[in-house]
Image (cartoon, rainbow, N blue to C red):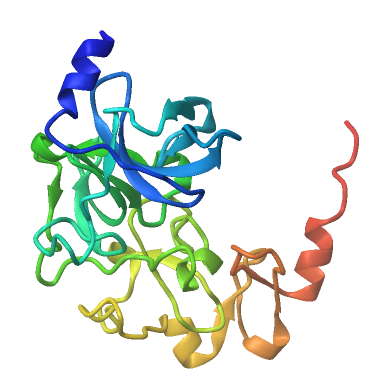
Length: 250
């Protein structure tokens, strides 16, 4: 009940005089502390609207400024806690199919860490309990992952350009912007172990590409690239025009 929730934060003094934008920790109704941000302040200044980071707006909650369910943010995932899973770093997370995937740390709380599986849509982001054994540091020589959403990973495809399947992908830094499974990449052009290093696929190095329509090879200036933001597919103009023609009615 509420007495249990209040008691859980009794060991720390509640935050006073919060302002819009302040980052704190807030205790949810399940008894878990999460990072939360002040979204609004009541006219009388005695209560605030909190948004729990990493959760839907439907969980936003008004709480009194003096509530024991609010406490100062202690620095989870930041330099204030250097041994914690650092926000923005790339780690490995065990997905629900039992595969270790390169993942970006989005948020960190007292009991769990929110991660984004690199190369997968944001709908698969999840909070992982710290004690679940599903997080580990990047393994030496591990697979190179897409960079954060603000970098080139956001401009790349979410499926392998060769097998057209989803999964853990590496991103070409060349003009094609395509993504590949590490297993599908030619052995004589492997991505570097350093995930910050630039890498170009064999096609970008040779400046020749395969038309997605007819599958024939051609030079870059003979092909037209799809203009969609996440698409790196190339087409002969005639093949592209043919793909836009409506199917004949039966």
